[in-house]
Image (cartoon, rainbow, N blue to C red; front, side, top):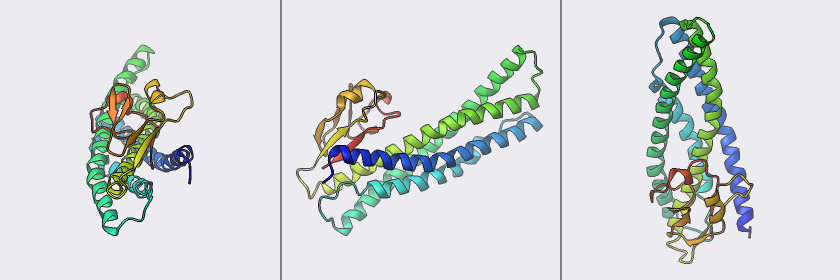
Length: 247
């Protein structure tokens, strides 16, 4: 049977694979936004409505999230489980996944709109400072270029957030369902120790809990990495690459 470290390493490889497949699709949407913004602003000096990309983001995020969920919902199979239990897991995952993707999409759209407006202000200021005419064409060109650079970096963060959250939530939902048959089930917090981990997550390494008992991470309590249900601080959630290993 694989050790906790081996299973955690497998989880990390799988997550990274999913992130690499999702990130280019998110980047493609940001590139399209930049292109459309440039055309609109250079011709009419108006800003595009980013809500028009809602379906694009939801589509690529949902597609990858479902693939991640299908893989990671099978992490805790010490016993053969009945078909109805699998159905229950799928139903609970779907009930969680739909609002989660909508929430993430809304956040991406809101921050993108704010980002574009901020970049326009910065570009206008910089052009004026450098003695260059702040024409709509110049502003459109510079804003588009800067937005693409920032969007490419954001795509990696978005992909990591989606994949890690869906993976860890899927494992927890499955473990909760299977735990009704396995009364001694437990989970262990595994931190990727690479010198980049935050102190609170470093200290959480190796914590062992029952399936339905929370981990103590800093001053927060989490049922699993990325969990928000108990009011954990954002600093313990964002960009977390830890894993809960169920046994």
